[in-house]
Image (tube, rainbow, N blue to C red):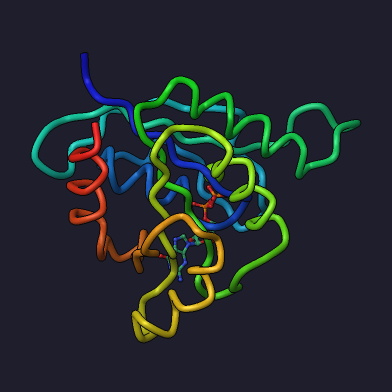
Length: 162
Ligand code: GDP
Ligand code: MG
């Protein structure tokens, strides 16, 4: 059985871009308008010491539900299928209430959740990660999904927890 890594986080933070980097594919839909990816998508991760399954999440389902509620529910469902999760936040936009809501839900469950601050290129690592310590999910790691920076050590760390 391959280890399973879920990518969680609110829309537009770069989960699908990261999925494509990890799977070396362009399968996931990357778009400027948030929420285009439907529910979950699976791929084989090929970065780091051994292959793994990667789950991309996101998308707008039933329109009558509040987006935040749906996002949290989808994340927790993906997390149930995963050995470990990477919670992606947006280092350009900074910490948002939706990030805090997700972090609260993640802290309540037992899976290890690593925190990745994406879109960190061109910013100092310490500055871009500073405010995300408040999420209390361990040391935030600065990455750039588009440039592929910081991803290999993140995955090595993730797989070391499995
Ligand atoms: P998702 O909704 O979380 O799956 O986010 P996407 O992967 O669809 O990306 C949303 C937007 O952020 C797209 O315009 C991406 O090109 C952009 N993006 C993703 N990763 C990075 C990054 O590392 N740096 C920058 N500057 N933009 C990024
Ligand atoms: Mg997406």
